[in-house]
View 1: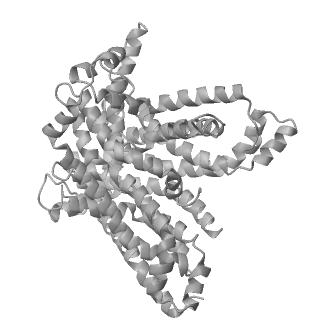
View 2 (view 1 turned 180 degrees about the horizontal axis):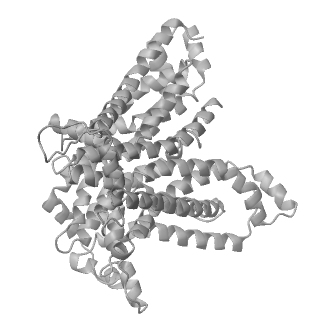
View 3 (view 1 turned 90 degrees about the vertical axis):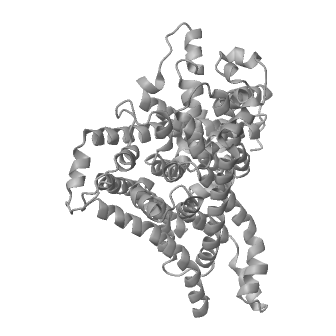
Length: 290
Length: 276
């Protein structure tokens, strides 16, 4: 089929992309690994001696590291639980016959297109602010003491904000998958006397298993790198209460200018992300064969 | 789908659907309202906000105090520039992989995808230092290049899934009729590929427009796109709710409109073809 000439042409057409991505990945990653082995602080000019794994020891024995790791897990886990459960419910709802379905779907999907800095600042000021935020007004209207969300429950607040942004993604994918479900199967089950819950558990849910896995994996990749939302709301505080691994590395790198420790943190983040990536890649790879 | 639904059922569905839809959409609706209020009115109790006078003044203030359109223009250049550059590199690659697949095509595709899994913070310092050395910090050039690299895997993948759906027989037929590579691409492939390329472009403009890790870390003032400009409201002085609302609404409006047109492509692009 493909001639030798077309193979050579094909290779020539693919190589720019490959070379660019190779450069983008290999060079900076190599530099990160190299920096992570040096005592290298931008504020201290002079020699940058080789220190082996000292930066890793420094970064990982820092109490902030354990806290950031835990916060990262809570942030990713919390958002995943909320978006998956909420996404299934919303997809079921949007799949029902209702007037103005298109408009409702547009409203539900809209938050995904709001840039992270806007959604975080809008939630921070217009809703969560105890003095001028809507939740504060609501609390006072009910005779309650307004709650200072970002000071007293910073991580939970961030989970809420990020969930609002990612709920549309889960909904959209689960809805797309739900609409490819064979309706006759559902109708047959209904005629055999299966109630709505039984139909959902035995037919719809198994059908959604694969898209749900895809949602979990892809969201995890993005959620591990949450940055802007923290940057504009809590700056990781109070203390390190809302610092995730990405933000800790940023603080170490561009606020303390400790290139060595920041790079060691970067390598750790890459390793963690790769653990998730392996599962995702396997799934997508299997899909390619079909 | 043809199943008949009783009217009361449908009314109930509609009521629940609209209530939940409006709740989720409410924050966007609310900034739209606040953007047309004066600063003093924007921080009043919700019902008083609604009954206060409407005004355009915040839109004017946002522009005069902070050169809003300068940042808007940066966003346009960065998202459009990186997408177009990315397409120039990715279209030939995706074309070749879809129509002349080799033994290693699948591996190359998966490897490209794996670069997308690299957490940006893992390469923050090298990229930052390289930009610093080259004098590219806070320039649009740096962001166009970085954004192109960040989205290149998604562009290649999306194009690949679209191109793969073009029947290869058509190319065979064109070749039989004596079409060369150039004719093949220009007259056969391109017309069939345009919708896929357009969808890819749309999604990537959206992704680049909203990207906020690299824009926050590599820009300060001059090259700051809207993501970074809006972040400057995190340490404001005085009353700013109406201005923040106006700036936010203008920043998200173009992308909201584009996003609504690209729902289907979003699923395909962000799941790398795993869900269609």
